[in-house]
Length: 425
Image (cartoon, rainbow, N blue to C red; front, side, top):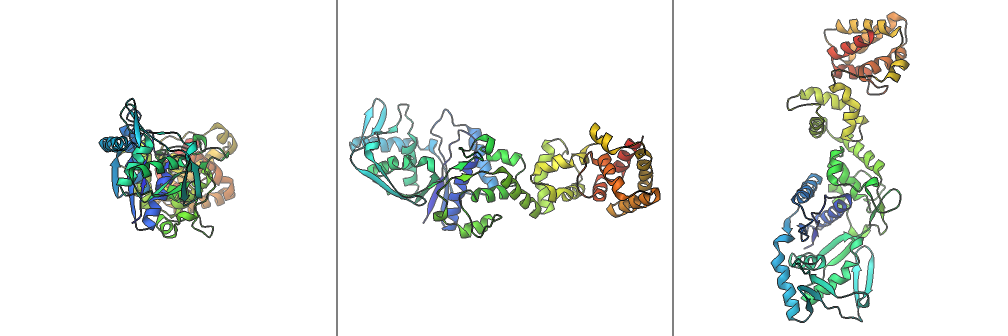
């Protein structure tokens, strides 16, 4: 049975590169009917923090990457010490003070067939003796990694190409301890838009940051799986379920993938459009609460109508905050340049007349508001286009937005009239 693992270190939050590695491991396991192991590699006890471990677990759960087994290396130190001493007893390793070092015999080649990069050969003449246990009693990365992969039955090690240099060293450790060597696959790096290693400027931020910035988990997963792999047919919107059905690790590109924030936003916008209003509201509520726009008690039906009004115009959940903030404010501040551009001396009486017509409505909705508006335009001898933009600015503080009369309906009769009269006073 195929068994893979994702092994993050809790010395920082789960970043995009790590999330993609986790995703490809998860997809390979599920596509093969295998198992996915999550292993926290917290041997660096000085830099490992509980808050980072929690963020990693929360981010994995948010992305929908469930695991079948869970381990922490800090619980397994005695196992590493036992194997180190066994290698010393077998004269395959030696003590250097309190450290334990593996002897590397010179004059041979270490060969492995990478599932993505084909055959790789490294001469042991290029390798020095390898630290197994550090002088402080903690295991070296490669040593604990090899022992855990072997004892946990990991059949395939799928990780970033920055680990290629570790692989021949680890193969020597597998051989020294008599373990079966797993198959290896090294994923291409993710590059920034400038062609350099991914940096914070071009997307190297934590998954939790993307969550805070209003990205949906399904959209982020969709984008990550396209970084180095394709479902075929130029398909860009693909569910995780369908991706698993089509996934082949041998079809992962050898060349680096380029992170494109604009494409991620586009994909996120497509998922927002497909998302039901009810589900979208559930995800927007925490954002609104964190910004102080709503409390624990609010009119859910009104919020659903508000979200529905902007759904096709949103690329992220934060776009709703940015574009619909006028719906949550009692007092609207309109920029002076917009006032000078759209409000004229003759605007005030027209706004006042529109407010009177709207106030007379017993049933206030988009249809009745539009009827009242067009009746006023006709009575004043104006064209609708003369008044649409000034009214929109008066109600929203913006020149563009959803349909004016749908906006009036969601804004509500009282606030619509109040804002018109504020301009006409």
